[in-house]
Image (cartoon, rainbow, N blue to C red; front, side, top):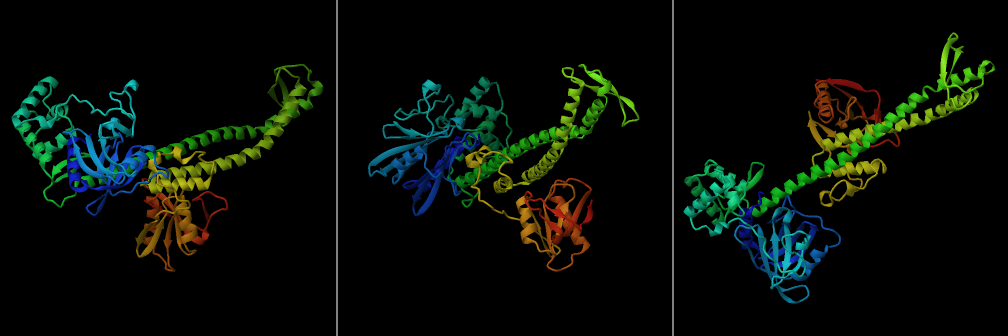
Length: 566
């Protein structure tokens, strides 16, 4: 993992200079994997973010706002009871373990003088935040475990806190570079490996493969065990540990540590804050987008299946005249038909030059009874035809609309875009998804939805004209029906889902070249953007109408012209 013991040790070293003697004035628990301590220290307010997510566990100062629940969770209330009003007397780690100890002392919320320690264990899926008293008895923890349930330790109220066990060595126990080399040499034989990355990461606690690879690159050495490489790495790791100005650097889609070249470079705590905030934001956006897309595609699949059934029903309805013919032929020939049960009957079809036609019958009833059934089926299918035609038209509209939503989702670039699309769907039809928002994404993933919110509309300057582009159906409606004037020009790719593009004419006549540029903009913001030959319709806004009751983004237009975009 990138957040290894070296990173943790460097973070805590930075924190010592900022939050020691700081007063705890706020405590929040935005979600079940995160606690934020508000600290007032030396006239500055800090927010210490403690995250135990299995993917993004860390401790760092943060400047990013979080949405808190309306009612504080139990663990948050416990922390407020014992820690609010107290001061931080110490913060430290043990070696390069990914464990942070924060000691508090002072009069808490209940006016009692207390000494407490908050232990932050940052160990992947086993991460936890634990509050203990001066006797090391657990007051409470964010996660509770028991040996009886398969855990290696008891983590519950009233249990004695014990450190997690490890079979790796502590780097701080190494005497010098020769001792370091000898330890690696022994483990090289044990592991049957010559890779420094593999040997060091499997020998010492808290030194990750990412860190070693980054240090090797910084030092310009190969990943091969030998005495010179081992000693060079030992010296660099020692500098990282002892240096007071260590920064974070991006390294192969991850990050690592580096000794800063000057004191003005970004502090490690805030580097981590930006790095993880961006990473979480991207992950949450992808999860939110994919979950919503999955529901839309599931609904589309159901609608397409329903459309197949309706098409079969329509095909059957189109054969209604056949059943009428069967009934008429049987009825008109009853005088010469033996009225006994049979599975078929052959008659002359007087509608077809008296050519013979064989009619399949229900053998359990007489021919005359079969004729009545044919007439009944004919009437039923004739009645059903009008109904299924209406059904088909409705389903086709829903399919077309949802296909436009799929295009919107695939074009979205952030959570706000997805939130707006979700809001649009809910406003378009309360039944189109038949689901609740919490089924689409994790609670922490989604920003609070603002009803009727219109997000930022794309604006372009083309040859001195302002051109508006909608990013979704709500925006398409807004720029076409609210913002545009009747003499403005509207563009849309023909026969493809895409954005509405509006050229604000300001009573000027745009050149043909300008029209082509706007048409190309419509192509680039459509499902046909990868196509090499696209038709784009354009017309004045006064000829674009939105039918009453139609779904967002749906319009009809007349008096259009078409441009070919190659």
